[in-house]
Length: 462
Image 1 (tube, rainbow, N blue to C red):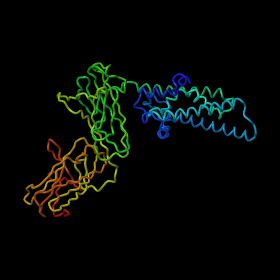
Image 2: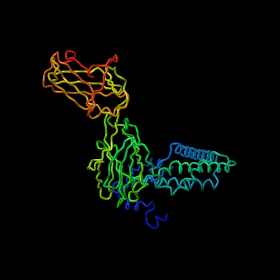
Image 3: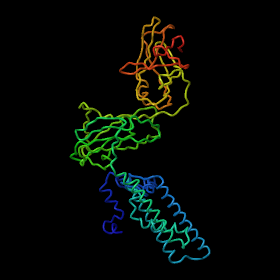
Image 4: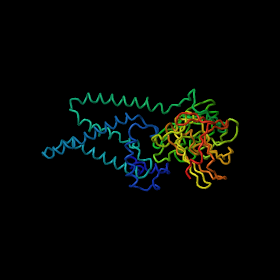
């Protein structure tokens, strides 16, 4: 009311849109269609959210509050049913009940109107926490609903029990969820993937965990970066974590989730930066997305230059994550490369001088080494006349495959020499730079000579 009288702005919307113009919906005009879409979020952001709504608590806490609200709503419905029944019997409510009804109605309509007005003007204005000024009305409304289920003689014990229960929930929220969110996460003694990037002598990125996340569309994983400060910055810098091939990861934030501002750094300060990453349901499977991370000045948009351990300026590629394909039924295994990769029967098609070799691979376990595939053509005299070497899986290398995953890969070559029925195709896997071939066995577990699979061209499909 004071805001209305003094500023002609009862909900402080004008001040909101002036100080945070970017949050205005359609330039600040009232947008009822947007409000109807965003109003449901108001309840999700009302109970037990901290840090401007960014810090949530456990699902059991929200279940508790949802149960309280459900019981309160059902209690109000019960009171209304009793009132309607009394009116039918021409038993009119007392003055106290009438006043309660008027207050509840006024509060409900005022709250609904305020929520609709806020949600139709600002993108973030639909957060329930902005309506906590009505907490007294909320409390009265909930109490009215809850007491409908209890006889008056148990009111006092119920007050004690509910006070203790709410106090316990408040303590859990504070010490289990809220305080840990404002603490600096330490760097463990062992880091999955060590890194060495220095950003203009202000800080070092020293590691990442896990070393190579593997996920499927719709899944969520946690990525952690480990930092070490070298000296304080002249202005507040932020940390960025981005994917280079997609928009899946676009995170920019103050260091240590705002708990260790760059202007407060001291040489030797270390912290862990945790990111919870959600893979969209429609993310293309069997792809690899590269991650880059660093520091930037949000005032100028300048990314700090990254240098590696040799002092050379580089793009700060910290690693990647793989979006794996669905788990499919295992195909018949014809060959095994070591104990890491299985291969079905190769399908070879020759059309003139165009050769296609289609391979069905299966990961027998998670791998860290990428292999190269060789496909070589030999004449009858044993001389190699054509061939091609390439990274196994190309843009989806075998180090990204998840245990049990099926990967289809076709190699196409334009031959310079027409094969004859006496020509042979040789294929296998090897590592770089050692050029060491991976041993291969057939379906009977017999090792193949020279660690290669030989397919005579008289057995190919042309």
